[in-house]
Length: 117
Picture 1 (tube, rainbow, N blue to C red):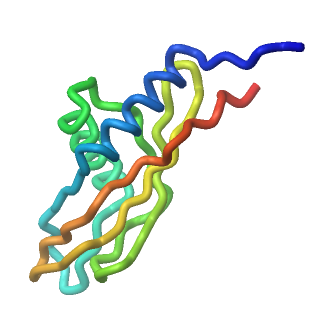
Picture 2: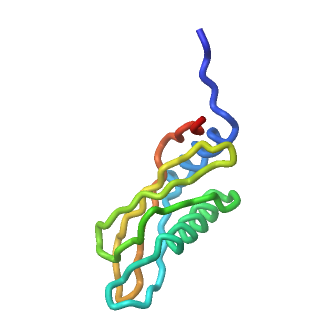
């Protein structure tokens, strides 16, 4: 019977997720519009920076498919991709909005998905 093993990158992703969950992670960004909105690219950059600061590891490769609207409770899903192609989901939730500043919490999934072949 074959034994499943985690790759080093998948293990690192799981460790990073666990670290982010234990420490907690949040961020905030100032935006300059009447309806606060953070672009998907800026969100991905901010999430990567916050995860790196929380875990003490280099900035991960993060992609976010859509802009984040500055309304409390709004959620979006981003994806962290490791060097070996394995991925980890990251949920971003708006916790508060003050004028043009969007504050949000970041929560990484508990487990990584293996690389797609």
